[in-house]
Length: 441
Image 1 (cartoon, helix red, strand yellow):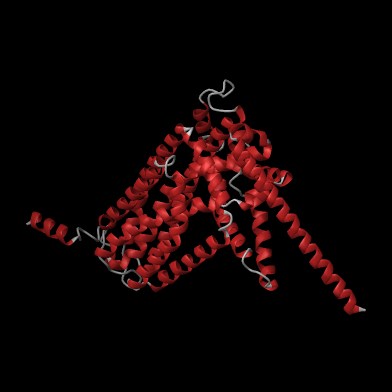
Image 2: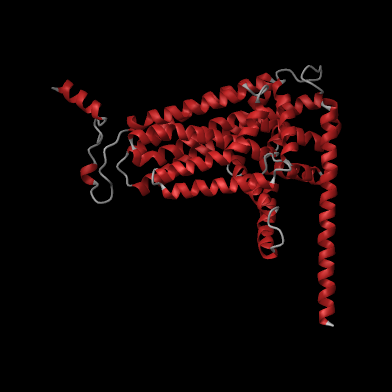
């Protein structure tokens, strides 16, 4: 009889849904719905598997197809967001349909606003990939961190699956999912920035010493960077992980909007206020701090401020602002997350249509974290190249003379452009002042 009851319960997918027998005490403020952690955990297992495969595939193809994959992520992301929006409307999830439609619109507008910067951005990314391919040990470190992150996600996904399956109302479940998502995002950011510090330290050492085969190159430099990132600098990494991603994303969006405003002075004034506010925050929270942390062992805020002052004093800040490599890598990360979320979301929709958005959105975050661990390897090389160019341009010239010439030419054009813009603004202000004086007289 017990065996028959067990088999019947397993076939219907129920299996002791009210394990703690508390539903009878929660009438009025909890829903009484049947659900189990085991019903949803396989969907998160699929998300972890898909995200890991995408991240590992990216690292495997880093040398041969990285530039093509980046171009695909830039140009196809808008279309994919639009497709997800249509699917949400089809599932009668109007809020999420509108959300993804707005995201697709903003993505399209951003790409159009920086389309002229993409050739230089792709050049920087290609040279960064060239550097990383000469350091296969840092790719192995990324593999290891991805595996550790996957193990942590296995534990995290049990809790998330339990929340989705619980009897708590939709509002309560969403708040619990937000808390769990923030915890996963911060953990993922800490892992990504730890890899960032390791890669930055290695690339900086290679550029400073003129190659990894140089006799002056410190022995066991990778293990030293790993130990340093996991001990002495770990506090700074955790602190910086709280703010850098959000501030960088906001900065990219404001820059793209600012370049497309035109002659609307009222709107331009508002956007300029936000722009200067974000620029002030960037002084204290920027990704270039991780190079200073890796090389000099400074605190995060001190490192961020020193890196930004170095860029401004040498004029390299104009080149950094022109480069969109961080945004392009973020697009690849989001694209990977969307694929992961779609795979888990479709499976969930087949069985449990009412929880497809909950599972799909959290699975998307899992995919973004795992793919981001692969993307940050290239980002670490990009930041080190800019820091080295600002400290001593001859380091880049010794490594790749053609790339040095292209960077110097682009920097010269950007400084000329800024000088011309500053002259136009000054002339406009003088003209306004002269007209005001004339009217007063």
